[in-house]
Length: 389
Ligand SMILES: *[C@@H]1O[C@H](CO)[C@@H](O)[C@H](O)[C@H]1NC(C)=O
Ligand SMILES: *[C@@H]1O[C@H](CO)[C@@H](O)[C@H](O)[C@H]1NC(C)=O
Ligand SMILES: *[C@@H]1O[C@H](CO)[C@@H](O)[C@H](O)[C@H]1NC(C)=O
Ligand SMILES: *[C@@H]1O[C@H](CO)[C@@H](O)[C@H](O)[C@H]1NC(C)=O
Ligand SMILES: *[C@@H]1O[C@H](CO)[C@@H](O)[C@H](O)[C@H]1NC(C)=O
Ligand SMILES: *[C@@H]1O[C@H](CO)[C@@H](O)[C@H](O)[C@H]1NC(C)=O
Image 1 (cartoon, helix red, strand yellow):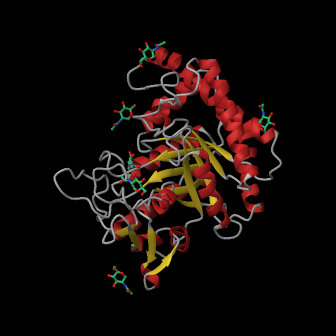
Image 2 (spheres, helix red, strand yellow):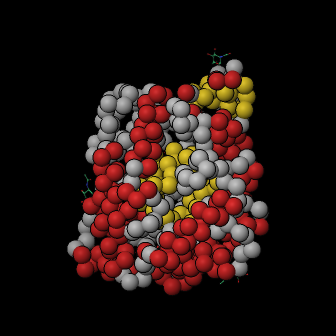
Image 3 (spheres, protein in one colour):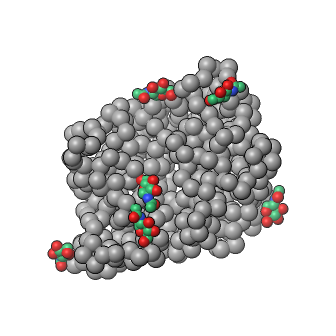
């Protein structure tokens, strides 16, 4: 942990040196980010998305400028391995990251290590990659090294990289599949060997990159879990991972958790605080983030789920209230290790439910009168990260 603490400090200093915006002088940098991975696709496709700033007389502006005025200082972008061209492939992500870096945003690269979505329900290894463990691990390691070099070659410093996305059920299935739910402890540890081997290979890929990099800013390496409200899950999962002996806490620099209001009524702020305080104690000095969250502006009809914090109104004001409370919880973590909050996909004008059973959790009203073109009008919640809100 000593080494990883030093790394953490190095990263903060590197961010500082690279001119990342600071949250008030001597205070540690706090990320207030949005995942806007789909933005360029929405602009370039038939939808020809255009964004209007309702606080400025409906002026047409870039979405990132509207969100930056609302306090955004970082963006999270997912990367797929061999997808349908144009869907979060390396060229797509480099182009979007380059534009957002130029706009002054810190960049957080979210590796899915798949040709499509990676989450607890989907996490298939890339189709073209080897199907036995050691060759797969070697391919993964080389892929991480080469993709990180591609960002450096494009002049894009990375603040954070997560090795896998929501890896509660592991990654690179089937070899990296895990499930703490179904296995007795011994079998669980055995089953974590595949995941641990692959995670370690990815981590070594970062180190290979660092060894051959001439950049002054190196990314902090993250493990990203979902169900951030469930401390039992987190305890079991991390103890199973480290019990393999293949991965130690020195192999990650930062931890990230997803925390959504609509997948279960136990996703309370109190339970989030319990998880984050547990992590702060289990892995002292490790910065903690809520790396995915969102809240509905609309959620009605028969399928509407029960939300975990029913006192927060389903509305644009509620979106802001939710995120402000998440930010408070993260900032209140013991030892001051809370380091960021990231809203998921606020600009996705044609996919507004954001994986929930609610109709709309994005931060823009949609105007389809010029179909297939779409215009997004900013809601008050675009300002969710302003201290004054
Ligand atoms: C949204 O628009 C993009 C670009 O036009 C398109 O590729 C994508 O399929 C659309 N998504 C949905 C859910 O319709
Ligand atoms: C901005 O556009 C919205 C939606 O078309 C409209 O309701 C509103 O009146 C417009 N505001 C201004 C200042 O034009
Ligand atoms: C690993 O998990 C699978 C299914 O999740 C199970 O069938 C298998 O027995 C487990 N392996 C070991 C070594 O316990
Ligand atoms: C990492 O990538 C760099 C740039 O392509 C390369 O020079 C270096 O040999 C790679 N490291 C390893 C261990 O493969
Ligand atoms: C939390 O996670 C544990 C371990 O996976 C699981 O057994 C439990 O059902 C989860 N709690 C809830 C409320 O889903
Ligand atoms: C819309 O978003 C959901 C996740 O919220 C995703 O599963 C789906 O693939 C997206 N649709 C398109 C066309 O990208």
